[in-house]
Image 1 (cartoon, rainbow over the protein chains, first blue to last red):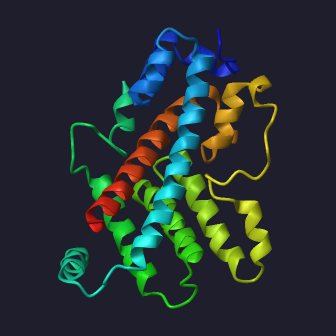
Image 2: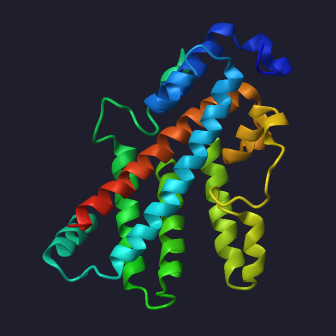
Length: 89
Length: 158
């Protein structure tokens, strides 16, 4: 078994583990999924770690972009007022 | 079986208007307005840091304590805000998920499950099975948050 199982394994079946693994795999974007299609669970974990790190980097990048856009955004525009009234309700 | 419970939290692909997605969007947008109107630290970097924090906060608040990762993330966010004013240096010890604290050259030798544990909030106290469940939910939420931020950027840019 690629994943080191704890002693609780007796409560969880192999089938359930496989289900969790395939669920996780289905969340990876297409490009990453291809390389892990026939791979071990360990490879899937590696891909997942890599994917999580790239998502964090995207959050950083998008935060920078939003910060940039905010400096030029007019907060009194009609669009802003519409959004604000939706949030208030 | 109970595996349905993991679908109700974040991104059920069949439901565009899933309640927690709306909550995430609403929380995040409110935070953005607050950030825009704040007069303290209106530097580019300061705003960016606040936006980043708002992103993780909206993820964590929309899921609440239903998940271990979200509870752990909420704890981290709260301890960070408590530490911030008295002694800014100490905030390092409650780093938000994305910021790496230590360089890791030996990663390939490490057990991948262990690496994953350190990436998922609260992961270090989970067994492998729980870790897989929590990771699935965490990845769903994080990717939803990224899509949300992208949507905001797109709607504001011309």
